[in-house]
Image 1 (cartoon, rainbow, N blue to C red):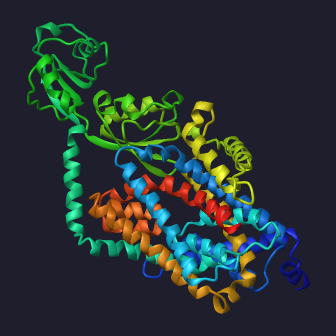
Image 2 (cartoon, one colour; image 1 turned 180 degrees about the horizontal axis):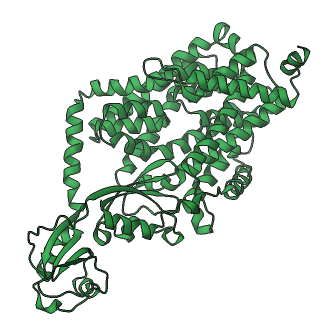
Image 3 (tube, one colour; image 1 turned 180 degrees about the vertical axis):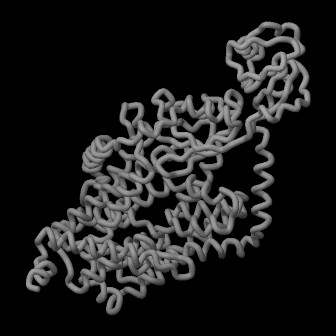
Amino acid sequence: MEWLINLFTTTDSVAHITLLYAIVIAVGVFLGKIKIGGISLGVTFVLFAGIAAGHIGFTAPTNILSFIQDFGLILFVFMIGLQVGPGFFESFRKGGVTLNVLSAAMILLNIIVMFICYYVFFDTSNPENLPMMVGTLYGAVTNTPGLGAANEALTTVFSNGNVPQIASGYACAYPLGVLGIIGATIAVKYICRIKLDKEEHQLSLEEEVNTAVKPHFMHIKVTNSYLEDRTIAQVHEFLNRDFVCTRILHEGHVSTPKGGSRLHIGDLLFVVCAEDDAEPIIAFIGPEIEVDWKKQDEPMISKRILVTRSSINGKTLGQMHFPSVYGVNVTRVTRQGMELFASPSLALQVGDRIMVVGPTDSVNRVASVMGNSIKRLEAPNIATIFVGIMLGILFGSLPVAIHGIPVPLKLGIAGGPLIIAILIGRYGYKMRLVTYTTSSANMMLREIGLVLFLASVGVKAGNGFWDTVVQGDGLKYVYTGFLITVIPILIIGTIARLKYKFNYFTIMGMLAGTCTDPPALAYANSVCSKDAPAIGYSTVYPLSMFLRIFTAQIIVLFFCGM
């Protein structure tokens, strides 16, 4: 049995360190799946498992823990950047500007409430109290990348090695933060006297108003003598309107036309066009008629199509003219596991999955244009990831001297890779970087980075966690964290409703996205049958994630170093 004892006690052996991380991560993940009241802490429970391991002395050398912690953080934030990058700039379009402004205001309020709690409840002469409140802030808003960024910045400020273990404050505030986000969102409903059924009905009405952008299907008889023996391509040129003819009935024979197909008087056409173009097309070609040829008309289908053709890279949905040219609707675009608006200005990238709705032949035609070949995307683009991490580390290490700050300002190993990843995710194709990573691969790398980071932070904080909670300010971290969570949500949620008249379900998604909190989004989706919560979440998530990470470092470097 001596070999087993040595395995658990020889802290500097590779086997011991590997066993430590395996046990902490496995236990944390399994316990994180336990739901209480339908809510679970998820993978974040790895932090608590690490704290327990560190408390009982199951640990590893500090330098090894620090390396794995920092590497996990880099991997985590870089994959987040790749995920949010494609939608980062698009999130500012139209109504998204207001939602992002509200989101940024809420992040600022979180910070203001944190400072108020710090000056009211804590001894400001103790240099460790403000860093601990920063940890409490990020536990209150359930934002782990922010904790990592703050932790990394603290190593610069506290250069003597005596870095405050802010994970204790994070751990104290996190559980009530998850509940507080959902509870405060529900409270907004009662404050603003919102009826959920009315909000659903309003969303349905808005969808009906948008039917004008959907394709118009019609049967037309060719009666214009000018079109005799003219090709469909010539008709397009004459009309200067976008439409697609999917069927021609000529002398009893049904065929699928091409640009060079010729029209004749009396031909029956099945035409798909933009609704606004229907009348000019009818006026030019011939009257709309009833035709009993439904057996030849293919039924409407919906299909996810994969963009794999490099020539599509960078083209916007508007430039593709899907409704009018192909007779289909693109309802949404999935990129790096994230649902994006299918707005005309959204630029497509290799690896996007577009949801296409329309007739079978039209959908198949779009699939051919897009490529839709999974084999082209099977090879992982490891080079792009590590080139990006290399550039991110270099960028994050650039020192910027600012008067009044004791140390130069750096984006660090969290902010640098995040910004570079966002830029690569959005513009990488212009530098001939294949930025596509499958959703599952992105999630895997991101989760590996996250659990390595959480396990390391937990083990390092475990030694003094019990003293912090029981004998120290643990209770203060709990109730101040609750205030940091609830007050900004109540203020911003009410303003979004009463001043800007946003639908409540959109507000729910916006609040969840600002806190980057999936459980809150899951709750919002459970009470709404529409996509409004997901739209609100995805609109503010990219900027919120960036601001959470960036402000963590700003707070530490500007205030904790004084």
